[in-house]
Image 1: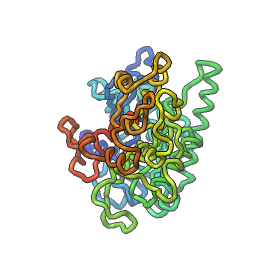
Image 2 (image 1 turned 90 degrees about the horizontal axis):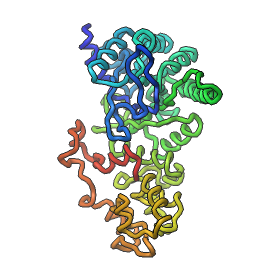
Image 3 (image 1 turned 45 degrees about the vertical axis):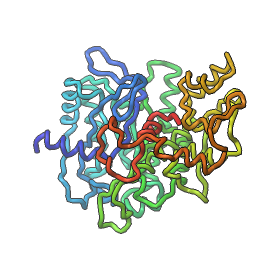
Image 4 (image 1 turned 90 degrees about the vertical axis):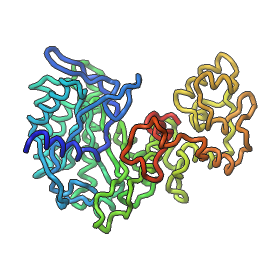
Length: 436
């Protein structure tokens, strides 16, 4: 098969994997080498200076021995198949880099023959890049559950980030939709990578010459909507993964219907994209805003309101805490005000040391009061324009006239632009930046 045809098949097959993020790595160039991995990031995210960084995102192969019901590459699915050799992966990466198309590589794979064989091929692809081509650009690779830990360790010394995909939120769903996979086989390499990262960080604190191991950390992916778990269960799992394995990110991927014949899959026509966004927004609240999963949801309401972002929904459920006085509230409480993000809260704390702030001062600081005005006072003055009433504020926050429209002309063309319950542009901005 021609290389171009392989690239067409295996780049398309990789689109279902969303574990791409800011790199968090600063691998330097070496004498005679090419490329570097800047801390500013990789594609599918934005750097601090607003740049979108690109990478080559491919599968090593879409041949697979597994028959996971939710996966387009499952062995029983009749689709075009292809496989790169390790040398082809390396050559493609270098050729794309030299043409200034990319700054790094995201490499994943279906399971061919067995986990060890697949992991060996992945390792060899990266080894050629690092040692033969002296490529120092960013590399994110998928660790294969069930592969020998020595192979995973050897690969981890060469890459910037690794990820082990959990995919389904519960053991029950895994057994139902992916019976050849086991939860323990997924968590074992995740725990191993976490312990090695900590070990290498301790070694580097003693000597800068200690070798790196996955310096940009590890991540995982959860498929949303293929199984019946509620948002609360998914969020609790994410919270536990952050606490137990120190993950950099948990990625949420709305289930794309790939089979209409399996009775164990939901009968949906479109991926639940808005639900995916709500989980991303809640994820930011877990990691940077001091919320816990059980604060955001409970057994009575185990799913997010798709019409409101999770922070605004929490505030409406706790109106007894509002409005907060902007000149007296501590940092932690400011973070809980809808519309005030981490950067905005820090600006407020800093500015009020100089003077007492009013609403005009907040606007000058760049604080967006579109939502925050319903939940704050400045020197005792409330500018929400309506009573502190759940129904009234909810209506004001969900009024489409006050929201960005997903069909705004400057939005990039999307394959999903005609789907109902699409995230608004504002939703997308919050999910990416974490400013809520």
